[in-house]
Length: 478
Image (cartoon, rainbow, N blue to C red; front, top):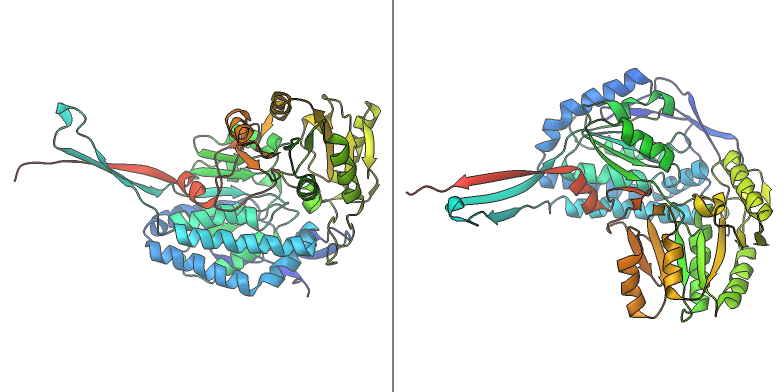
């Protein structure tokens, strides 16, 4: 299987190849794998203007028409699943087995959106709460918010694009999307499939663009919602410049998992290995801080290190590979520096720590100082560290000692601790007897603190992309 030599961008539903200025590299070999058309400011302006014109026709689509578009996408993505997985493996360096898994999630997300597109309901509301409102009846419905702007990240080029595109179609919002420059292929293949449908002209534009030339995605007041997934530094800056539009941010964190004394250690080790090193740790809910009860700390640590050392790293096209390259050598070198800083400050290296280009070994440490970057910031790579605790309250305090709050995992058999964690751990989601890295595409997903604003998960994104429109009727005597 091979990629096409070039890929077009999409403006107002139509493919266009004005240039081939954006090189997409194979993240394992570093070689240019294909080239993609790059949008300039004039093309972005054209896409936004087309979305504005499409707002009315999109809003008037019947629910069954929106559903048909989404069902077409499900069918075509299923037919093209291996092509999508191959492109993802090349552009993101994601191991082929994980790439197939992400294609499955892409299909799931569009299927959920197809189901939810015919469930967009409102309420009848009694208003006669006092004598002055006698004879008045209220009701409300949800209507599309209007043209939306989407900016998606490099680490899940298919599924995180899907979590913006599919809900927008489900509610009838036109959109412009800027995929990550390092991984634009997934979004462009989604655009290719959408172009096969009868969506109104201007319903979508998918426009790879350099960050410094893409301000209109953020600042144009004709856009009514900005949904951004990416780094905290970029996300909060975009929010500050977004003007009056609604902003949804999913910004990541330094997720923690707690291993209590009564946990099934073999199961907890297996899931923690997955959570820390799946996709080379390049997940905003990847396990970074591993908080282990002192009674089982040594046993858990030794099993975890043995499992980490056994992970297969290398060519992501190899079916046996678990750890592929990071997105580029610069990011791998950054994280190598964070590891060196932690070691200089007294941490102990348990395994890994060696880098070869963009490949970084699965790395575990202990004794990491609280004020190091590895502890305080988002590593976004195959590195995690262990922290012992003695009492449950101490574990909760350690989890909460972070400016981030996306998800946390706890392994325990104690239902009272589960309920206490749900009350007191300051995150968007608590995952019990699994790692924080677990996500199903219909659940409300998002964070608090510096991890963002709003929730993804199809139904919840649909709520963000709609507004409530009220109707009040005064009844008169016949």
